Amino acid sequence: MIKAVTLWGALLLSLSAQNAYSADKNGRYWIYGVGRQVCETYLEARNNGGFSEISYKNWISGYLTASNRSSGDTYNLLGDTDFQGALSWIDMYCRKNPKNTIYMAMANLNAVYYPNRKKLK
Image 1 (cartoon, rainbow, N blue to C red):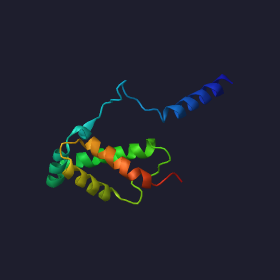
Image 2: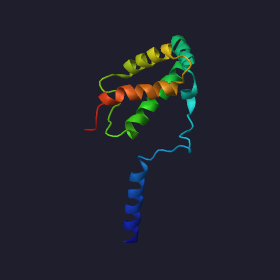
Image 3: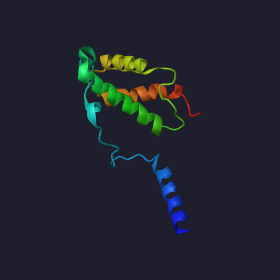
Image 4: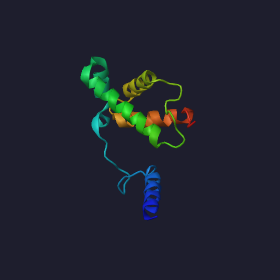
């Protein structure tokens, strides 16, 4: 009986923690990886290719996966757009905003694509 109660408690706790977001009292939080880099650095990596470009693509795909997991009623944030389409959107954003970070580019992409996302099935 105690084991069953403990399992139910753990399950409820894990479910409630899935939609919890953390930040300090000013709403700030740490950004890992290339998300902290500015768009002009991203565009250089896109032009040069190689490991640096792969690092950005990996970070972006991780951001999209996390958004799919943590955004309400979302199966695929990109909707009918594929990954290459998302990269093209980021390229365009970064050309217009070279001093913004990749994280800001992704936050803007999220805001633009969210209304047309594929919802949970």
